[in-house]
Length: 131
Length: 262
Image (cartoon, rainbow over all chains, first blue to last red; front, side, top):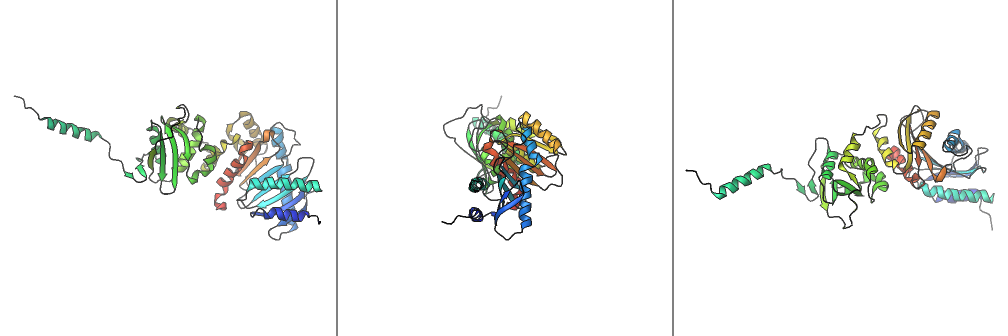
């Protein structure tokens, strides 16, 4: 039986969320997008920018500052981040440290953010465990 | 010789005197009784109605065909909110169908202000409540609501952010609003507020940062989440309870980007 590729998994995931325009599987330690699925043709530069944004959101010093301010080790990093802007929303889901894999989603403001996050975390865990 | 007055004349005179004292007839329609206008505006008309409701009643307040606010009132106190208008949907989860307590005065006032935002006639009809009666010591009194109005609002917080702050507090452990690194509004847990104030000082943010709402989860104790709102050169930090992070995020998203979503 043919093994389902990561791109196919991402496409299946995105199909479950009509408001989701882009989903990318990335390695935040290197800043590389490993696979992606988008509703419209996009450029590598845009995917790289999305990955960079995920790195800034999940691993920047300010979030480490949040953690240390609340009594946690400064290396504690969030595993989920949502960012809403006037026209779209970003959802970043990352595996706990030391893993560096993350799923980055771009969606409309009305997407079911809670379900998107939960399903993304489940998919990410599966993709990472399958190597 | 004194003139003996007829009993009927006395009665007529007495009735005329009583009639002179009686209130002007209230306007009643199928939607109920129209609330007497107050010089201070419709909000005070509603507060006045609450203050005059001593026996427990369900007050159904309507404005036009589309706005209904249903309150369970007794002893001049709002015991619970049973229904909010769609304009106050953001507060629904935090306030509807539970017994109110004194700390809910700010949130209840926001709901009332949202309902009374338009300067249109408000009608009220009453229903008898269910037999089960909450303690008269519960609820938010008309006096508490007046006191809440009197509280000074932070001058630096625009009204739409101010409303969202109150709505958000039901789901938050702490909230701090800062401008140029200076925390000018702190609510909730003092320790968490102090930590946020320090972060706000260390990370004052860039006035050019676009309006955005960010939430981080997974690095904090007890499943809490940190919300950061950048709007109008103001940075707001919220420490959300685990069960309130989605509500908090959605509230701010809708507050800032409602037009974009419609």
